[in-house]
Image 1 (tube, rainbow, N blue to C red):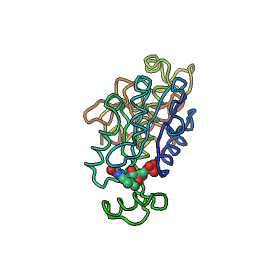
Image 2: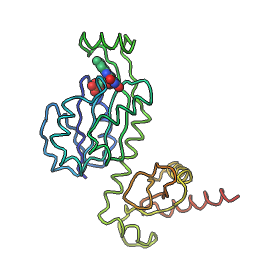
Image 3: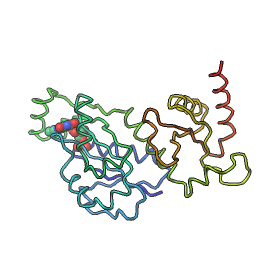
Image 4: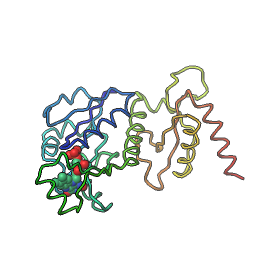
Amino acid sequence: MKIAILYISKHGTTEKIAKQIADALEKHECEVIDIKKHKHPDLGKFDYLILGSSIYAGKIQQSMNNFCHQHLSQLQPKVIGLFVCGMQPTEEQREQELIRAFPPELFERTTTKSFLGGEFLFEKMSIWERWIVRHISKVSNSISMINDNAVKQFIAKLQSHLFIASLDDTTSALDIDPLSETGEDDLPIEVFSGEMWECGMVKSLLEDAGIEAFLNNENFGNVAPWIAGAAVNVVVTKHHFQAASDIVQQFIKNNET
Ligand SMILES: Cc1cc2nc3c(=O)[nH]c(=O)nc-3n(C[C@H](O)[C@H](O)[C@H](O)COP(=O)(O)O)c2cc1C
């Protein structure tokens, strides 16, 4: 699948994270595009798009805002991830900045969106920026507060989304006999379904055993199972189904006793 990560970065932090995401999506054809240099990239050639911008004075950079509005109709059906970089200290303020960052037309239809932290890089700031940071944030040295966990989670959700989207026909994929000899080895098969916490445990057990597993809701297409109460299932590739089933059976047995 062809993916573009479109970003804007003043001192390099958002660029660094954009490249980290691209590296993690190595299974796909992933292009990292600086929209300051490429104001009108050919969005038509990509299947999915991810947008990232840093926050200054509470807002995403003006060029990213302009870019979103200029290309809104092309972005809407393809954007699967939105991220921002910033140094807001409180969770509440970070959430507010994230919600306000991108146009609502993009924000509301995107399931994977996150505030990934940021850096103050004094050596790259102008005198004016240094003055602001010293006076407002009371920080006078370079500091990195990139939230590695948030970055990992963001990547995991994107991978899950892409894994499921990679199927041409999701319904038939669910219907196939997991033990049949025919069919492609990388077709996804549901191996367990249950409460969110159970699925989380099963996923960890499978991953500990070296089996890649994804969480999904019953709709097999909506990858937002993080919502409490949603019916969730665990999906593995057909290739790993048998080994995964053994682990699941053991998990069920242990939970019964
Ligand atoms: C002058 C200035 C103003 C900033 N204002 C904000 C802000 O309002 N909210 C925020 O979360 N981060 C703010 N930041 C932190 C930046 O978003 C952070 O340094 C980010 O990592 C920069 O990423 P970039 O190098 O990709 O542009 C500000 C930084 C500077 C230097």
